[in-house]
Length: 326
Length: 276
Image (tube, rainbow over all chains, first blue to last red; front, side, top):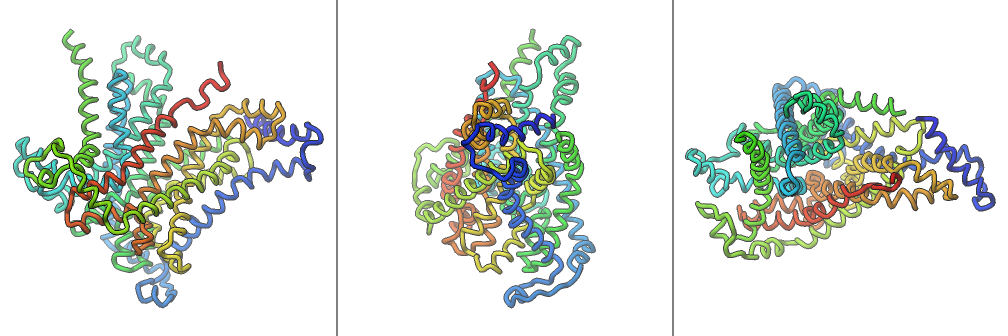
């Protein structure tokens, strides 16, 4: 594998010199071939280091500072050591928000993966017309911009004129007429979860369906000859074949849900009583809400660390895979 | 016999129910936008707009500085996506086709960058931009958005470049093309679907971006549509008709782009280019 690639890299300049007088003289084909990849990745690496790296570094530096409105206006730098971290790690509030974020993320990811897989497999079983119909619905939900979707869900779950309350009332659940979804912790999380699941399922379902089309039909035929039912076929053929897909999608969803800010913030701004703040919203409120930028920066660093811990398994796997490919 | 009829009906029935569930919020947005006010605030919901009206759209469009926001949103999105595509094209080619020291670390950096929780880093970027005295400008926004969509663009394009059979490139070079010519003439055309798919996701990300513009640009003339949309409801005092009209206007460019590009992006990548 690697020898073949070396060959490709080598034939580039070689074939050029082989053409005779046409190419301009170069100092040496080896050096050019060696530096070419670095020149190609230079712009991407440079802007990433400059903007992401610098912002991250600044974030780290800020987390060791006491930066309130006074220091901000006077351009003062007050180092406070690890005070911000000690404050956060010693507060029950931080750990409460952390636990809540993890539970929230896991609940959402489980729902998204279960429903996404179900719909993906359903797509594979449907006839062309119904498959196109369902795909159309999924694509519309998928394409709906996050900010617009969030506004629409606020309208759907509106207390007085929202269609959800009306339908629940008509179905016989009369206490739901005029129910205020944003007044309770659980009901607010319920609305956010419905929104996130609605937005994320199409990605899983459509990709899963696309992936199932790559599974050789013979495997299913063999399985059904052995008398395997739908569920058995899934566990013995589909799942093993698509294991890398499931792994990657699950962890992508973990990342997306864990760091989702717009939905959680826009539905109820972390309310009522800051009870639906997840870590990104908490960092925002600590930093901007209470104008304590150093503290906010410390929370955001802690958030990144927790996200890394949650996805460490996947990252290691990806790393190993890259190693194997070499 | 009976069981098999049931077995044939349930997937279809489920599909229809699911279709309705996924479409309903989108439908409700558009239908509310066209309904007369008395139909919106009625105790019994009106399922179909019987007397469609454009008054909500008029109110949304006539809001202060609407066209400036539209221009800002398009500027920021198109420039950031174009920049990241160009930068990513170089990098993805290197990563997919060449082996060099540091390649793995570069991919790893891109993967980490892709999951960077940008939302929680807005605060640090705010301080940087403020110290550079560039608040209320589109330039820092474009810069950060470019980097935001870059990792995804690099990693996705890498897959598309790798999917173009090496033999095509090799045979072009055997035929006397230089490596650059082989790239421009052979790989680039085959990458078109990949470029479209990738730009679509970049477009969606930037078009939707909310925390950064909210924090950096307090000046209304330098804001983009998401800030306007989230503040719309409060500004217009629970005017759901106008809010849904505004949401529809915001969603339409993405919906159109998605429907057009999804098919093209999925459609035949290298289909039959080498085999057959």
